[in-house]
Length: 245
Image: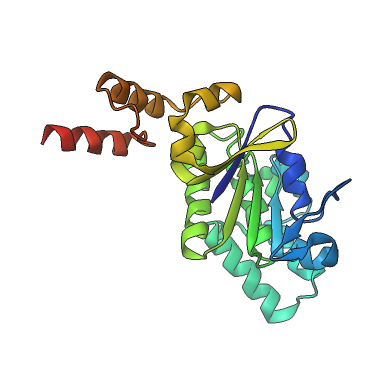
């Protein structure tokens, strides 16, 4: 799982929309799986690289959840038993199989977010791009949704690209982070190493999570200037426990 971060206007969403042909570059090129994106048909790249918008209401339009989830694979030519299987599996994956006949606009924000994700999953992509996946979700909805995303990444071996301002989400879920500034990549590497580099964080207006700040302060107080920080409360507690054992 990869996080795309940077201040507003740094180019995160613009870059992400180049991955599946929603945007085309004015100069240079975009390559996917070893080929220029322009060499793919829009249907081929759109099927293989799914995009979940920040606001699910910009993505959802059908009268029922089932119709919404079926729209993508139907557009790609699926029908009959295979279409039904794709829709059923996608709804089961996002834990909405009991709401197939519901009006999607009557659901909670978290549920609508999962409907949007199910619609992408039903097309059987290899990559999913999420634009601010936790915006507008409460803590319970956020943890549930990101848990689903992390499970897709682990179990289905699906590549996940996540645009986010939430450094807590980055620390918890994304081992690799790309930092953009003014349309340029200024860092591409380990999330843990990024959060250990205070100068780089400050230069790019990035505020690390509280647990990372606590870990960095503890390391500095102990003279461990090269220590990489804990990225979660559990990691921090485990480190302290090991020292006290």
